[in-house]
Image (cartoon, rainbow, N blue to C red; front, side, top):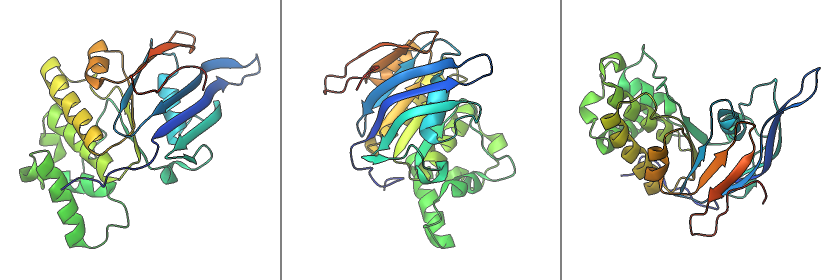
Length: 244
């Protein structure tokens, strides 16, 4: 049983997305313009030095861009323009470096938090949570306190919670950075396998070339000024870059 139903449509598309910081002394460029297409099931990697605007780009896609910043361009998901929609209606899932699990809730409680309101009834919600845990070989952890879990286990629960929210796209903001080398390799595989199995267009921000190599998709390189340097095409006709 899948954690979520397969995503369908055209994936995630950014068209001339640019972010700036208006200030009394003048407008400061943050990142862009960025235009790229991420088809269902593919992982596009965004790389660049710290402070070049990568996380701001993800925030704009989610609809959580800092109020001090201004974004322009279009964000489309499965052909629909979501640029002006509130975050809760965009159906974009995001995974961060920190797992952000709620310490006062059990593992099951954390996963229940991600379930859509449309999944009604205690039995149906429990079944969905148990199915997700079974996929991760963690069914025995249903009632566990998340503070007793290892870093790798917590990371898996965080991903499952994101997937249970039934996103139509997945954003990864350096989610492997705090794991040791062995755990990082295992969790990378876990994340990418689920993203591909669920046909989720996935955008990965990372500093680690091995993350990009394991992702296997196109790479978009950003310089220290937030400008697009270019990308490696995936061979499927999708060209990340600064122009459509």
